[in-house]
Image 1: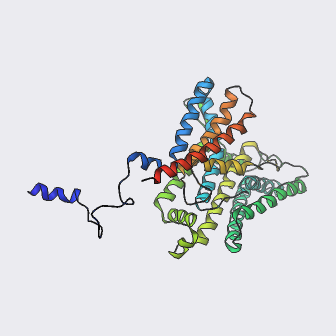
Image 2: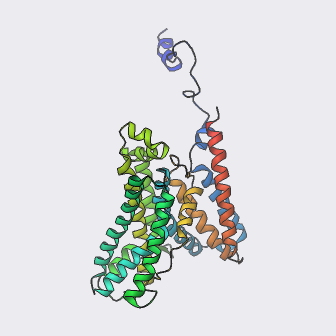
Image 3: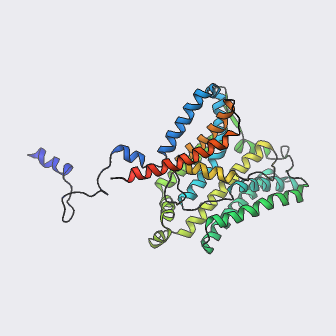
Length: 358
């Protein structure tokens, strides 16, 4: 008797008014459907498939040095894909992300060299400029109500022109001067562009930063109030504002996070190559957005994760370098990119429909 009284609460649930059964919203779904509801599941399976394919098609991929190169290629995309993904979850996207990377690098390089300052002065000013560009995009968006496509397209064109014109005006060339002999360069290079040895294989520090940023972004999305705000404003900003979510603050800070990512990647490029070409960066914004989309983020907002873009960036790096290791024509990379993007969109659509099916 005592056993039945203790077991009863475990199997009986309070009946809904007028009904003795739970509805579809409260019924526990099978594990498979709950896993499919995760936005990163599809891209994880895709990344595994791509990895296995190139391990078979290009035996040199199995070498530690080759995998380190693939991870490095992935990290330079992935660091930017993370804030771009957060912005997309928040319902917006940034077409100026690619040239903003170069703007940041040019600012740090020219300021340090032309004024003969410690390179850290240029690094700090570049951070301020990058955050300001992001804040401007967010401010214009919330104040004018224009789509982020138009706002960031305008910023893209402005930065592209400024990058070229100012660099030619200041340096008399399309590239900045070599800053490798300036004060503070070695310390900055250690932070942004150094390497370390793992079992005889040289691994770039950007791989570590990539994973650290991914862990932080995942924690923010899933464990903080700000993460709830991001999903809320991406789902329906009017409803979010009605329940007290600071929509303006959230949108602007998301754009500023993209600015932070652009600064970090820009510093890596500067301290890796000592100089910057002012015309670079065009087209990279599409790579970042595609990595986020392949990673499970929707252009409509309100859905996605920070883990998915990690696998999306890895797929980019795997395909880009795998084609080279396989000895194929690298021109095929764009074709693979298009196939991956379309495939990811279709898989995401199927996953959503399957996960919400009762």
